[in-house]
Length: 85
Image (cartoon, rainbow, N blue to C red; front, top):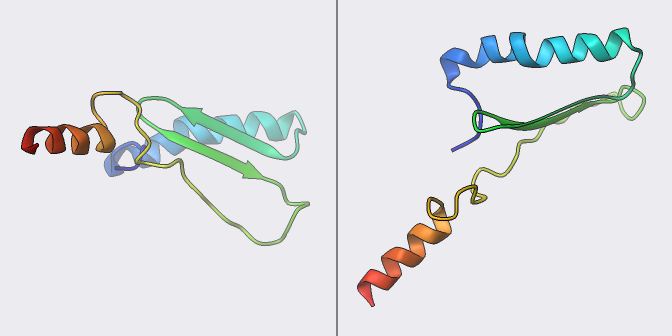
C-alpha cells in the first residue's frame, strides 16, 4: 500500500500541504523547489528544478519498507513460516 492519503482526500492534501510549501519557496525565490513529507499519512519527496531538464519524472517512497517491526511483509512471512515449521 502506498503512503498517500485516501483518494477522496488527495485533492485536499495537495491543496493544504503541498501547494502552500511550493508558494512559500517560490516567494522566497528558492530553487530548486523541494518538498519532503514523511508522516504516518503520507511519504513523498518532490523536487522541481527547471534548470535540470525540460522533462518531468516522479517517484514515491517504497511501500513495502517495514515501518513497524511486527506489522510488515517480512515479519508476516517469517511468522507464517515459523508456524508451519
